[in-house]
Length: 104
Image 1 (cartoon, rainbow, N blue to C red):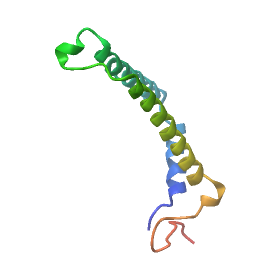
Image 2 (cartoon, helix red, strand yellow):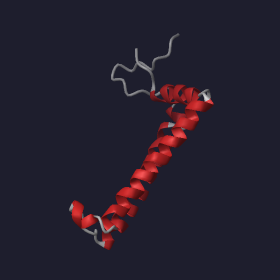
Image 3 (cartoon, one colour):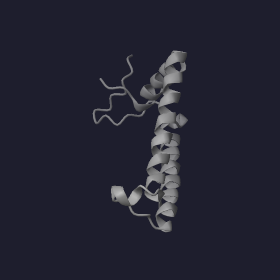
């Protein structure tokens, strides 16, 4: 027996809704850490320390590419989420046997 993708998403949302506030605060700190690392990684090649570490300043087009690729990726993720969470997706499964995980 397998769980349909929509049932898994609903279960994960329920877990997120019932999460302990302390855990949610920890997740916020984790996000701040991630943004700090990303900003440091973007600024190190521009710093005076860059040649010592072997970094070179990336071309301006690289920043444009990263911005465009990020927007396209996030757009595709939103499109996929819309398809998975659409009302018509309920009960569909990718299980070759056709088992939706529902009991009679």
